[in-house]
Length: 191
Image (cartoon, rainbow, N blue to C red; front, side):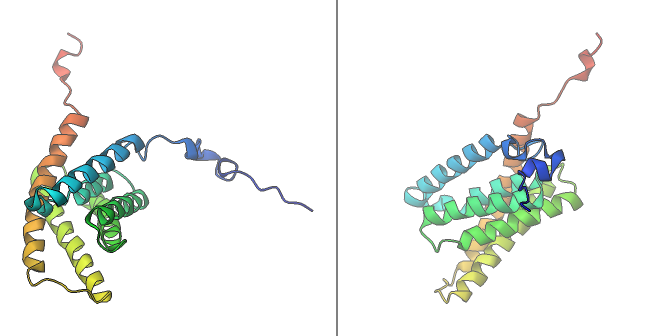
């Protein structure tokens, strides 16, 4: 007796064409993630070769956190992996080092966004600083695990990176929200 193997939509009839879905959720679209990924890779390439002080800004982490705030944990982790692997390729580090750290940060951002209100810039700055420190901690532990040399200024650089990334991420995400979700003027309704 042969069994019929159905498609994903046969097994999960409420999925409404999951494989053809254009949005990761109600806010972040796939094309938007692709543009953010390409843009962050371009900025990181410029910073790595021409503007060394710009390396204190972890643009990949900011974008992973932003996507994580507006998506589920699985999607946030998958995007963290993608952004982290691209960052590894750009900086020519061990492939997977930033991939793992961004995966954990994206997953944590998604879970924490369900617990904390991120409506103001201050809360986003604080959460970005904390998750940037977590990101640096995971990178540090991975470097210890693979027995690589760790510079004496690692934690000083990590602290500077956390503050720079936190401020830029908090302000930048509020600006992007303002651009993406413009305020509506309800005073004109019915007039």
